[in-house]
Image 1 (cartoon, rainbow, N blue to C red):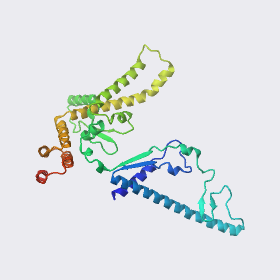
Image 2 (cartoon, one colour):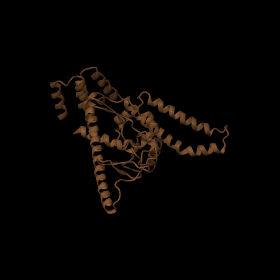
Image 3 (tube, rainbow, N blue to C red):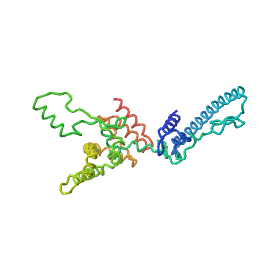
Image 4 (tube, rainbow, N blue to C red):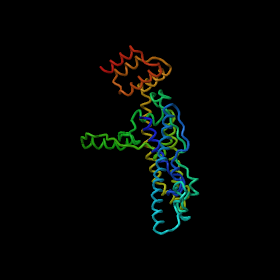
Length: 346
């Protein structure tokens, strides 16, 4: 059941939601630190997932309480045996962990393990969760993205784990040209003249977190401004007309690794941006984008779908357009469906 799978995955997400301010130790009430305080849902399946998640959470708490009660009963039986042997009284002292309530045995927080006054200030990293049913919007995933991250995935396909495989000549064009010249000079024949390298695309790269959602018409100028700012910050310090004391020099030396890392990241993103922008300016890309716009306006584009199949485009491209045509036209006509099916099969 997909609802149960998603609900259990969200419960596991709460295990990663530990953190915030505090000593990080096990304190009273810490089990609530990972709880996402506000959960909202949009769509019928999203509501079902939230209901299932709450049911599983309550069931888990019930089982924990039952286990604690059974453990408390074992302590109570052991205490009765001690009373029979020693002939002593029947209750724990003020520093005990358990006390007899007459109905059963309940756990009592001792001063060493009791509620921490600072625990109330602990803020989990995830404080709100919005669960959206994909059926609420089936059209958006079928459209070609126009953001930096979306275009990278469309052109280069971002791999699982947040990395992309690109040719070395793209991110290191100067080194690749030197290697080609050396190979021509020595008449060397290498079957792998342009190897591929893996570039991480995740939150560990501060520049990527800023540029990932930029529009195709914006991220080029954004990266250019970042390059200017990086150059100015470097030139201000290396300016010989400005006197520098030893503390400033020491601070600059400490920032050299950070500067080198930012410079490498900026160069990589500039080369990738040039690649994806050139792909976005290609005739085939603009034709596909125009086809999507026409479908959104409820226009039939069956002839274009036929041309895409015949031109040998990757299946995921025209299958996505098939779905978009069906969603925006209340289904595909039977005659066209049979015709396009035969074209795909043949």
